[in-house]
Length: 506
Image (tube, rainbow, N blue to C red; front, top):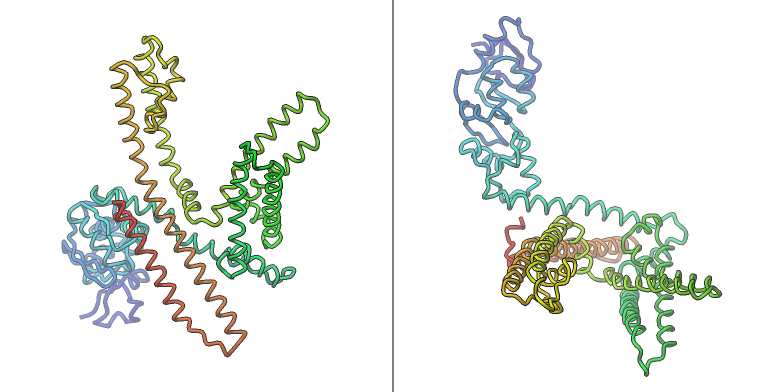
């Protein structure tokens, strides 16, 4: 029995007279059709007039009915059912919808995940799309998009968890972290520059506090100077008989000198100085010392001016001195928690904006209501609506300052509703922000552990290449790094379980 003369199989290189040759999609694409009038009947002979399709996904076979697939014409399999049932332009249509096909057996091949397809199959059978727990959100999204499904089709029981996982995956982009690590490696490569060995050692002391004893000593001194500078800034504003002002000024000069030398050394050692100046941490370091020098410059230029001009200069100097409080942000260079806080605020700007919006609406409503309730009382502290804003702010944030308070019964009822609303409003986004802070904190911890292990491997590889007598077991180092990662991940999961957000992770 000869195979149908409509096509020649290229995959098996069989001839038309080969009785065992099957009609594959590769052969269908390169087929030679007898004529346009005979094409339809021939295709009808090749494709069985069955109501069932065999879908082969990653080696697993699934049998589906044409009636079921036709209910979802916008999906990939729905379009496949339409093309096969129409029995025209089969070659071009199937090439766009599947990877290969056996038209004799009515079997269509897809090189995709068979495990994920179980959830797609369940969607065709029940109309409900559930999320695959074993697959990350972005990979699951790629799978459902391939099959022509939309993420809005996800059932309500899985939708909230899926979108939170997707948001977290996009925020904590592993590819972006890898690019940052590669960029950092490029930044630390001083080969070909002036005095490469000296700059390399100095850079490690300045930027890697745990790399050596000298680096740890320098990091401790830097943190101590930051703390002393903050304490000195506070003591300058207090008049103490036992503490002479010249001593505080000398301490201020010493701290500024240390910060200046540290910043200049970092700048001189940096390979890419433009990128160095764009870094947030380095901008904070610059803002910590810049007001001091601007103040000295302004005072020296305006030494012989009139009293009015000196008063204006004094105001400028006071504003510049307020910027010294930015020195506290220098602790972020040595604190993972402060860096996590900055990352959380940057990533949760929508939640923070939503929180401020809720508070603004509540403050506007309750301050207006409370003012009109209390304005008729003699000796009332609610003298205006803007004055009542302060009362509404302290009430909604549950501070309760007490300088403005209601006296009437209706006013106290309004105050109770205001306080209760503040508690509810603050509780809504705080849980999301707390979960994001925990995620950022442990992500930074994992990144720091990866950097330490990477540096250790680099050092050992360098030492082993220079000294053949050194015996390095890289397998033990890798096992140690994996154990560190697992320990941090277990702490991460324990933290999220204690906060009631275990489903936030995958």
